[in-house]
Image (cartoon, rainbow, N blue to C red; front, side):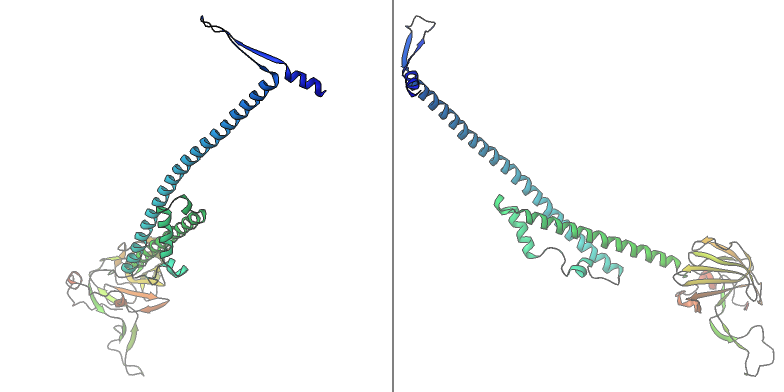
Length: 332
């Protein structure tokens, strides 16, 4: 078998090249073994060159991809830095708003929850390293940490602004529900507190030696059918006749506040109606226990009458005091 193989390898091969011109044909002879050797060597060199070239191509492609990726990551890092700057501005705006609104919790809610207000110096240096360093300086953990920090801070800002929005809305609702508006025009003829009873004047004094009584509101006298308006937003809880008060309206304003309007000649609202601040709810009259046309006005807080002047911090003004001379002494 070996001899046969050697005989095959020893056979002579003739390579004849015949050009299409007038040049002489070229003939080359070699053994089969020599031809196979050079053929194998050529194949190996071709394959090796292809492998080397392929590796170099992959290297340059990978390097180009890395450059593109690095550019994109640098751009992303710059966007993250701008996002962080915007969040820092939002934090400053947050604090200014809380200061202007005199909110009870004027401390940054994120600082209150985490003990820090945004990135530390090390965080800034880490981000700067990501911006200025090469691909080796950018670690996946850095990206995750920075993105998570921005997300957490953004959520905190959103929650804080939602709290401010709720606070502003609640303050607006509280302001609209606070009875600071005057219920009618006229002259104040009787204040809040103890007084001599206008219905018992001229009577013999009782065992206590006086005719005093507690007056739970203020009386505002004017011409009959003067308009009476709600002093704040609320819901009508009572509208009808009540002994002593005559035709009466009670409005619940929420927040533990309610107002009462007594002695009206006619009411324009019914139980369950939603009334707005300044809405006309009736007309001034002298129904019930009264000596003349006037409005008996009370303010209740947590179920107890308080002095209406607590909310009517300014005087009635010229339009009220001058609307009718102070000669009428209608009281109830």
